[in-house]
Image (cartoon, rainbow, N blue to C red; front, side, top):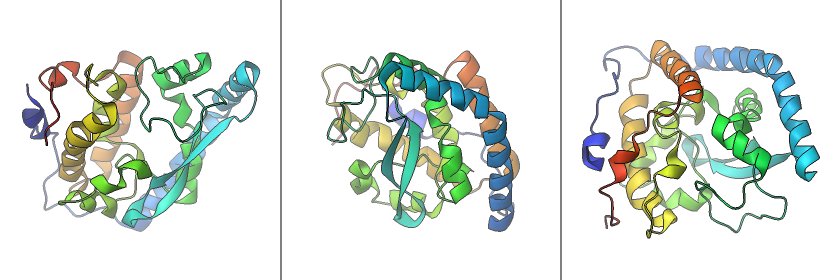
Length: 236
């Protein structure tokens, strides 16, 4: 299967005629579900906090400006995965076997537990439980030629691309600059999937992607590394 075939795959998108879920109802569900999840996962968050502190001290959290709905930047929070001496001037992507990762950080990256603090972003209204993944400002120039339509939707913790590309760090071919590969191959592929899904989403389909996300955390990613075997050169 090629990149172009992957971009055009069907993901059981609901029929276009179905009415969109009212934004007020979706916001109410976000608050209720994020609040419940934060309460139930508080012991896990405490264990992660202690593990990070014991291994490397402060800071416990990592924050970074990301692009939100209507292209408005917001500050997104994660548990810190990198060494404390790393700054924002490095690669904006986390690579497989990234030398910046701590021991605890590798576990957080594998389990996605580093994203637990984003429940706070959901409660604040910066993010939704389900939405396109918020991009780093380093890739703000990629939102053109129709891809800017993604910013009509509030970014989320879960979604099609978060599931399909859970092991994205393993997809970068040797000998190709990671940032350029992301710009010219991965970003357009993910943007097409997001545009195809979020224009016709429903509450039921969103719930389906949350359940898929929970499943792949347990059994592994649905992203197929063979999709990129043929991507030896960056498309210009």
